[in-house]
Image (cartoon, rainbow, N blue to C red):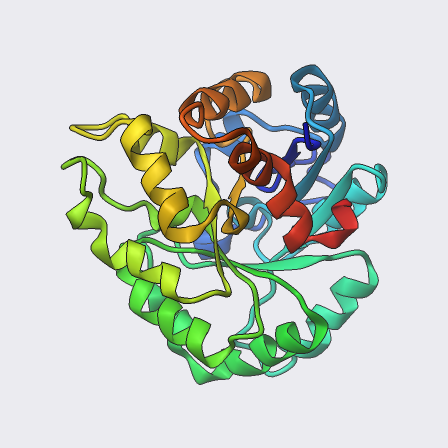
Length: 282
């Protein structure tokens, strides 16, 4: 069995003097106040769940573009954790800022266009001011995660075409509508992403929930997903502690959801694709 790797947990410091909240869009997420999880708490949860390593995603709805806690927290456990951060890619000095964070340990970036505190706004995804940052990602082989919904898929496809050398990881798979069940025709624009070889999908608790909504089932959806994209472009992310439940419980739901897949495909989703995206997790 391949090591289990989580590419979407978050950490929140319990020291608000050293790491003051300054949320993107001016509104702090409720989960970060209700379920704060320090890096030490995350490591403990990982041990209990049997998770070997993680790519920890900066909490934009807590710290805005201040990546200090995710970088410094992960640096305490360099054999197990790597940080994925956020930079204001609209700013002229974005490439220089990205380089500075990379020097401090950052292994990937995330573009947060909305979510728990704000409706998705895909305009940043098509703004030419962001292109220097994307060009740097291509130069440095730096993966870019994007948080968006179906509304942002036209822009994602344009970026995937323009920056074909950048691995683009879609958080929560962009939340496709699965309620009508197979053949999942309402998710057609989502499945079209498969034609772009540099697009990867992050499978999270939201997707497990949606795969059980309406006429959808894990047994019909996840095999279709693998057949369309290939397991080598799918990676598990817990969204812990944003999603309720213990890390072990969240992993258990994902394992159950993937039971209809081959052991090899499950190995890719639960660990090997993460190592492909973030080689420092090898």
